[in-house]
Structures are given as structure tokens and as C-alpha cells.
Length: 244
Image (cartoon, rainbow, N blue to C red; front, side, top):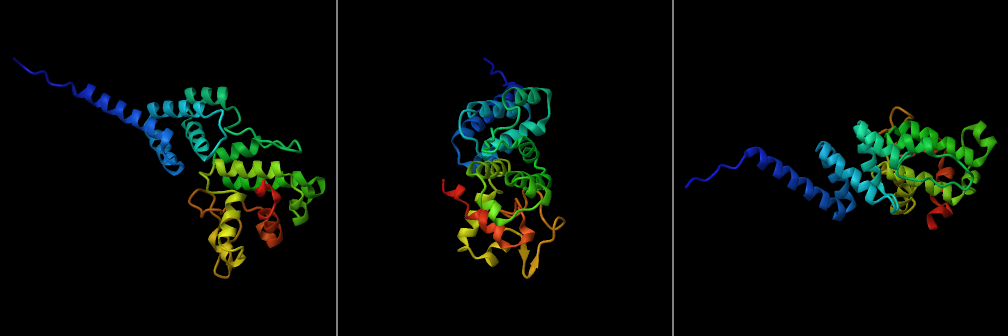
């Protein structure tokens, strides 16, 4: 009586399948931080991982978007295959968010830049969009008064913030900056170094000394008008939008 030797190819395929099944299951149940790590693992796993991420995004389509959705979308966007392009065009033609605006501002281009992690261009466009919220004078001036920031619609400020958070793995955005600012007791001299805008007595030089990727300190972006003093920033961080 002889024993057959297991086919190593079938064994390997079974192991890979089990691994993918495990990743799929964990992606549904783990913490947000772990989910972001798992998405990267799936991205590195080839076509099988990409398929799981497409299913994952579809399952979450009716739920509020988070940085987990943003990360999965970015992986599929970066894959740039015919399959992923068709999927995104069919189900997420502009991204994972449907931006709202009380003033009819179009945030599609901002979403696209953030999804592609073109953070410097997104930062410049963010200021442009905020000037649009303030009207023609601010558009021509290309910067903001703190009194104009105070009049921003809650919806639009929340939309801009949400876009930044969703496509930065939760690292950037006004609400993130506000959380850090409150955490240092609203002390500006502690706040600036914490987000990488100042080192010792030296302000970070724009644009070359700022970090335009996810290696930046938490809350580093967007810059918003940071070269024009504290009042604009204070108006942003104390805006009623964060209380609603």
C-alpha cells in the first residue's frame, strides 16, 4: 500500500487562498489602524488582494466614508489596470466621497488631487476653494481675513476637512489640527512645533521645508494661510463647524 505525495503546487495555492480568506475576514473586524495596514498587505498581494479591496469598497459604499475607504480607493487608483479603472469609473467616478457645499462649490478637483496624494497642489487648491467661499474680493486677493473664515458655511468647512482626512489616512485636516491644538491647551507656541510649522525660533519655510507626503507630522497639512499670523488659524479651529 503506497501513500501519494501531496502536490506542492496545490498545497501552495491552498495556503495562498487561506491567507487571502484570513485577510478578507480581518479587514472587516480589525481597528481602523490595523485595517490601513491590511489594505497595504492586500495591495502587495497582487490581483487577489485587489479583488478583495474592490469587494470591500462596494460593501461599504452606503456607509459614511472614512480614511479606510480612502486608502482602499487610493490603492485601486494606483493599480491603474483596466479592471480597476472600469471598477472605479462604474462605482466611484469622483472618489469615495460625494462632497456637499452650501454655496455650490465644486470640490471634485480637490478630491482628485488628494486621492492621488498630490498634497502640495491640494493645499494650494484648498486655499483657492476657501477664497471662493468668501467671494470675488478674496479670490482676487488670494488670501483670507479671519472675519471671512468666521462666515464659512459649516457644510463646506466639514467637506474640505473630510476630504483631507479620508485621503491622508486620518493624518491631515482642520479637525486633526484642532484636536492637537486643544491637546496642548490652545498654546500656540506648543502647537506650531507639534505640527511641524516651527522649529525652535525658526518658522518652517514655504514651500521647500514643508513635508508634502504622509511622513509629515500629524496635522501638518493643510497650511491654510499660515504665513499670515494666528488669527485666521484661530478662526478655523474655533469655527462652529466642529461643534455640529
